[in-house]
Amino acid sequence: MQIFVLGAGAIGSLYGAKLSAANDVTLIGRPGHVDAINKAGLRIEGLEQRIVSLRAATHIEQIAPDALILLTTKVSDTAAALAPIAKLIRADTILIALQNGLNNDEIARAALGNRGIVLRGITQFGAIFEAPGTIRYMVKGNTLLENHERSAGIAEIFNAAGLDCRVCADIKAEVWRKLIFNCVVNPVTTILGCKVGGIVDPTLDRLKKLIVDECLAVARAEGVVLEGDLLSEINSTYAGSQNVVSMRQDLLRNRPTEIDYLNGTVVAVGARHDLECPVNDALTRIIKGMETTARDNGGGPRLPPQELPTKSSRTGVRAPETSTSEITR
Image 1: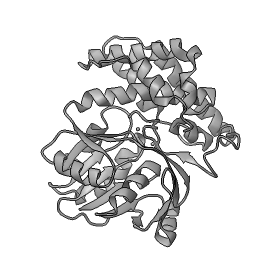
Image 2: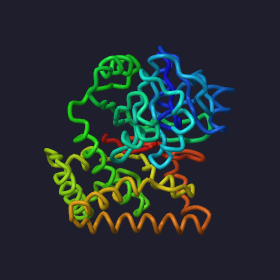
Image 3: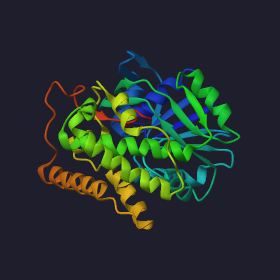
Image 4: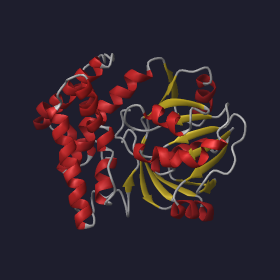
């Protein structure tokens, strides 16, 4: 199967590498990353240590019948990434929006002019972008895919590649579940300047509950009811994690975060239902303030050497970019 990974950072490169064993895969990414891969292959460190030879390019020139595109850009980059290929999309082209936040599939459909088949996906894998041509595989997880007549076939391809793909009957609920995890873990550990495992500190439980309760109220207003004790799930999922969330990595490298598509989205959707979300609003404003400070200072505070995954790293999520993995991209 012809597969393009559009926005191949950490998580996209990981998916592309795994899928390349039995498919015609091309990573579409930044010039430095692309050049490094074409010269020496993609180096994977962490849970797996190997070099994968696969094709990389800075743009898509042609799309074959029944091709698959994995969209792994940041949500804010979706329209710009898809605009150049909109006219290349065929009726049988499938695009999976494997991103954080809500309604990313709708953004993708609008950018493509409703061409092709756009499905929502969720990744629970975690990876870090260490340097051009090198990623660190941090968390082994699974992939959730929206139910569609083509989904079973895609799941078979993903499962053969070790990506544990499960077709989900209620993808909207799972999107909200991952969003809530992200709304807790990303901003709180970024503000504290700690690794993901720090989120289980009992002193944070009251704050985490306030965040979760606001998110659940907005989800219910949207017709989504999530079962289970999400606070306990968050604590059990991230206990001991040495990962660093993508939001913190973005600030360290003076890049915009996805806060507007996480806590900021909860606030915006809540407002449409006359629901106030003061805690999520406060977290959004704090992170936006940290973005401004990082920009004014030419970058955020440096990670201590023992916390840097390695040189020049950037979180790529998941489930950070991510599921409940720690959302990296």
